[in-house]
Length: 242
Length: 244
Image (cartoon, rainbow over the protein chains, first blue to last red):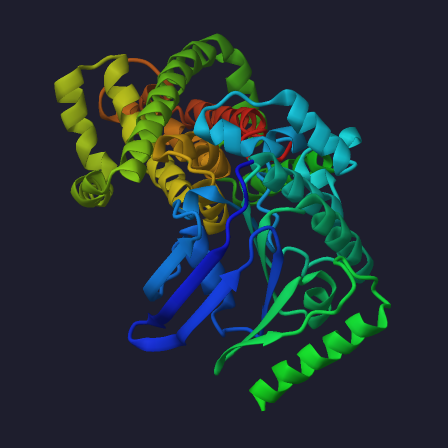
């Protein structure tokens, strides 16, 4: 992996002339988890998709830059709420999808290491339909790690999981993605409070930074300060809606 | 259970058929009963088998050629906007023409033999194959394409590794439809001009008031079509994602 860069996205977006978000500047610190928290429809996914170089349907005026002046979009790995596993391919094939799509030879050792790390070694040749929701997201995480990119974009990857599986996945992802510049888009204050090394709340009014808890992420689910932060974040979200 | 209900339905239909014949006392050249048809079928089994063989060859070649043509067309349409603009309206237009009207032309161009029937079968299945596969290719879940994009996949590689496999279930349903249509195409071709095949035999029997033979040939065609459909169904089960 090349060193993880600082990222800055700065600008405004509109859909067919209707503003989606006003001029804003979001900075992602190198090698850190930034959680972008917001309700539905405020454009947080659009921000993530702009960084990833994906189609958003919005007109964006502004810039997305890295502090090392290298292009951004070809250094990202992307993980969405839908695990996006190909149903006809095995776990192993899904994990090495990127290499197959680029016509590169698959690094078998690395793939096996990652599958083992995600505790999926017994499921290597299974199809996604034979796995549980949590297992499927672990395959998606292994696929993301297999790409070995310095920037990782997570679009609510854990929101479809049950509470326990979600907490497990958060721990696993926080540990596995250490040292990368991570943007986690979420609507869950608890998730932002557990994982954010920097927490930004996105509302119609714009971006508001929030002081993350002092404990290192991933924080314990019953850490008092984390719970307080969670409450504070929820309050900010509700005030915006009111 | 499935086979049992199919058997029950068949017996029920045969009973109704026999009942109508018995009650109305229709002469056998209007409506022969199932027993007579079965007898005629047995007496003419070698004749019917020979004509079935001819029709089966036409249908299988037609099914193969039509599928290949349809798949190639759908891939072209899916990968080129120019092809969509130029070819798609033409494709729809060919469907607006009744295939029946084309059959005499095909006989004129391709002759009395095998190929005019194959062409009919191809014509009739080409559209369902093309349009079902094309629809499948154009309906790749957007998330897969996003993912592929962040992985810097080329268009070609996305088509090969994602869009085609994602469209295979659609192609399978097109092929299953085609398996039912292809015999119709071949028989239409035989009606318009031929000296062999089940369509020819039906026409011949009808013309000589051998209604029992006509029924025997028709039912044979029906059984053949169902068998073909079942075979294609089984053969495409993996494509359709029904078995692993």
